[in-house]
Image (cartoon, rainbow, N blue to C red; front, side, top):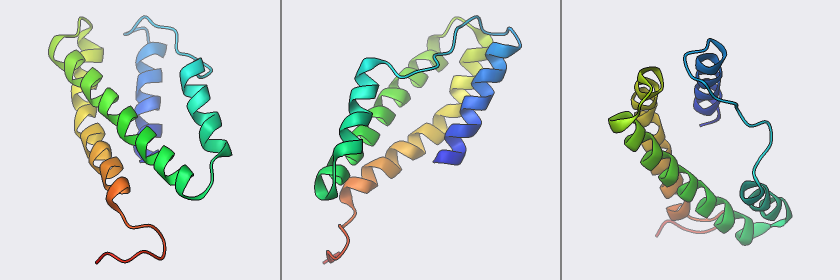
Length: 111
């Protein structure tokens, strides 16, 4: 997942950097995302796992929805194509995130 996110971030930065997309990329987290990160930093054990899993599912559901909408109806051809190309990986990440919540905890049986 980290490899894919690094790759797509680089691709987006390149699209903005070469002028094909007019945008200012954020350099910090917004308050909502910073709050979620702070909560995770202070969580331990089951609380961390539960919060992390929930954050991953919610974030990827939002990303899939956004990319689907833009790939279908976006107004910038370059960004629209990139969104469509990136969508399959995002859907895969969403499935992986959902699996995190179904995976047994350490020391817990699959039975």
